Amino acid sequence: MDHANSATIESPSRIQLVRSLIERWRDDPSGTYRSWFLWEERIKNFRSIRRGIGQVVAEIDAGKFGAAYRGSSLETVVHSVAEQRQIFKGADHAFLWKPKLRIPDIYENPENQRAFAQLLHNCSCCNTAGEIIGHIHAIDRRKIKGLGPAVANLLYFLHPTHVPPFNTAIVRGYNELTGSNVKLGSWENFLAMRTGILELNERYRELLSNDLGAIGGLLFDIGSGRYPAPPLEENDTAVSEWSVRLETARTEAQELNKTAAAQNESDRTHTEIQAWLRDLGNALGYDVWIAANDRGRLYKGAALGRGCLETLPSSLNTAAGSESIRLIDVLWLERDQDKVTAAFEVEHSTSIYSGVVRMLDLALSTGDLHTTAGLFLVAPDAREADVRAQLRRPAFSRISDLDISYLPYSELEKNREPIARFGSGLKAIRAIASSLTR
Image (cartoon, rainbow, N blue to C red; front, side, top):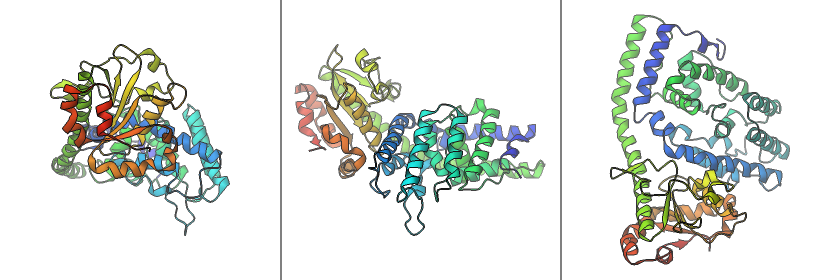
């Protein structure tokens, strides 16, 4: 059977079965749709990953990328992708340098390395699907050993409406849903699958999204065994058996929902820390900004952004990197002024990469890296060693010009009320934080 054509021959009855599957999947709190696609942090990470891709390109062009994956800017950005919850777990496997196999051949072969950078650069700059596909064909013609469609996971974060995410489970899910025979490791197969995915996405658009991450999540959950694909055969027995399997998946989902509840608790804690910083900033007399996509989150029954600035001052709204600045978890600004006094990024469990990028954008909003604002990474006590280790990566070399501090949860929790009552300015906050760049 052709790689993707099976996506176009579904009968009306099977279309209804698939529709029922998608509806069930969308309502599952532990399914990828709710646990990842609707996850607030997913959108916040797009800009930092895109900026990381730009840094990979710049380092290769400047001849500073090196000949190893470990410690490179590529490791940093791929690690950030891999932390995008379960759907991208293992995204770094394809990029790990395997010296015995000499794959992927972009570390010790300068020409291949430059071709890889050219693909990323070209796709960053183009806007149409035709241009993206043309650049994919160009890299495919080079036949770079070990450099296959796993790169699509980077391209997805550049063009989520044109390029679907890619991994073994997604391919398996696509084959099970459509009866296709897409193979791993081939750009030709990936592009054929992409065509089929676009057809599926158009057919069920009202249940999915223009962002191909949604249908990618559906295929991932089918391919990883979470949900059974409706039978390709049109007979009562097959449909009945599938219905039983789908009901079993519902029962199993109830158990998995406990894991989802634990993840939601993690997100709740992130919101709680933001609320602590919001209330402390207000008590100290600052105007407070809550990240644009967090303002509506509920904390103790009220929106997190209640009583905070509804828009940033015009100087920040029009600054380079303003899109990123608006996503900083909490900002304290001088009352009725456009001066940022402190910026806080809450790093509960994921990579600090995105938060640091937003700090850099804030610092660069004035045209250079000079900033008088206090910059704080707020994280659990147990994460300090991990945070310091990540900041030693070459990808973070520019932050040595900034004074970023580590503010542990315990110190914030223990001291926030006394600081609110007796403190002024940032002196007390700096006293309970420790510098990460000195």
